[in-house]
Image (cartoon, rainbow, N blue to C red; front, top):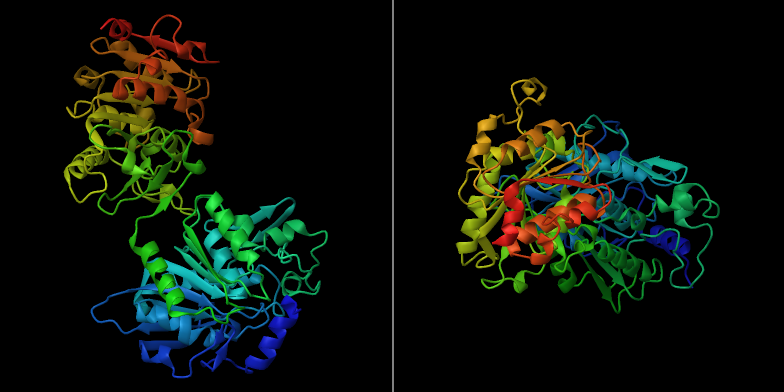
Length: 602
């Protein structure tokens, strides 16, 4: 039996020249073609570019630009060599004529970086280096004709480990586990203001759970490569090794990850791949696993079929809209997905994953949402909105898709017109035979809602005749005496705007500690011409939106929607009568005008 350590050292001893800067007949991913195929596919190759600015060879990278006419910028794949973290200069042998050549042929720019070895520095130096690579590429994108909106990672063996940690640690600046912490981001180079997030990953034969390299039941050498890169034994250092392992960073916000692993891999057991895949699937992350029956550690792996699948995977990640499955899709009967649509800029969609259950006889009602603080991303409300979608709703939120590691406050403020844009868009989609939403939307059942500033945006649009229901959350119109307390940029219609409302309206407030309480209750008391409800839950202005499945606020919100948009008589009981359901829920209070209970008599 070969141990992980002895196998890699043997491979490195036999295959690695003193300075591995040019493609050779072999790489750590198995036999490489000797015809310089990758070079022939390039319009230009930039070699030995230092991405940190320190002149060290271990901080050099090569950039391969594909031959493709009429392209202003190329999507990027950073491919990382394997060496059991023992090599600091093997970028020229990073599967150049197999993986890299297939990517070049498909129109991807390929970047092969060096990184510090375990002999140069201990973890997290290696991931610091790769994150610095991505920041450098974004900073220099224009110079090298790179597309900074798509940078993916790929790698073999220990390079796959680094590629996988990159994919699962987007937004994680400092990793913490128990009383241990590691600075994953680092401060290398001069481009620390740029993002190191990546958009997708494809890993080949990578170790992803360094605590359990014996997942195949075969004991491994205690002096293993992972011990060398950590600089400490595994025993007594569980938290440290978890922060070395991609498996422990997985969460539902991760980017798509593809996995190739050989069943006969006697260096990194193929159970590492299945453990990774199972964890990704359990968290709703787009992923695939190809287990190659005759595949070893890099050998018999790079078949035309596998290389094609890799390219198609990156194409899919690049061209398909962003999407994530939150909280296993929600608790409703229709597990939901959060995604963006290319045809609707600056909005985020929440809807059932399986749309085949909806048609003209069973269409999806619509909720159009505006965010608090005029934020242009629903990152604070996504659990709440996802939960509503899982109960059979098309939810369209104002703002950009929440991206891990990207602060939602970076965008320009949202505006009321984005809500009407959402209505325009979904109505057009329902009529478009080429749309996945064709004939599946109930465009006569549209609720517009919003929290705080989003509530003011909703009231600004409240006279739109396409709206059939309103829901104002932690919000209310300002009056002359307190208008100066509003955040600059908030819409500020007068109280007269309330007279234009033509549909039922519900205010959901956070009790007297909610800064919007006085405004919201004053609005409610002025509305006598349509059914109006005001409910309070003593949680303050922030509500419960970010709690699992939206917390307590999701209960009456769903009941309000189900009653009015789905004619759900059971849901109506939440609000009708003296002993209505909301009054029976702990800590909730309700007030309603005379028109609400008259609805019961109709």
